[in-house]
Image (cartoon, rainbow, N blue to C red; front, side, top):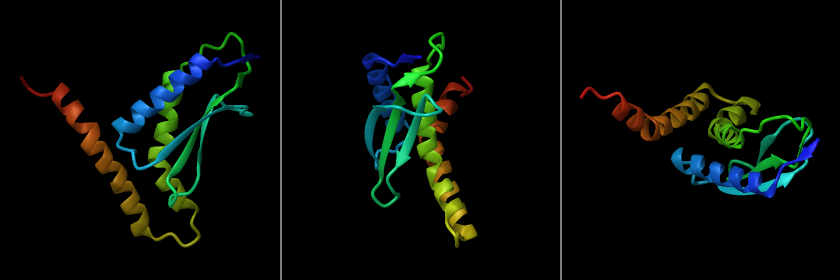
Length: 127
């Protein structure tokens, strides 16, 4: 077992902030924690869709000293969890309506259209 370093935590924070900005999730208040997690290297905690507060957590300890950490990928993964959170939330609502799923799905698609598509379309443009 080994502890993750302050440098790894700072990298995790900066990478999360980069992806938050890129995917337009700037209406969330991002908080960062470096604490013990039972079974993962990183996680998020959502403090309600109304309050728009998300806590990004990097595990204080990892179980395998030999484990190669990909801090950048963990940050990306957790930001994608935030991007998809509205679908999870609606799925847990007792009386969710089909149009709520449709609206949440299209909000995510619009984010991808506005942020990812222009970059990928330029990369694959016919010259």
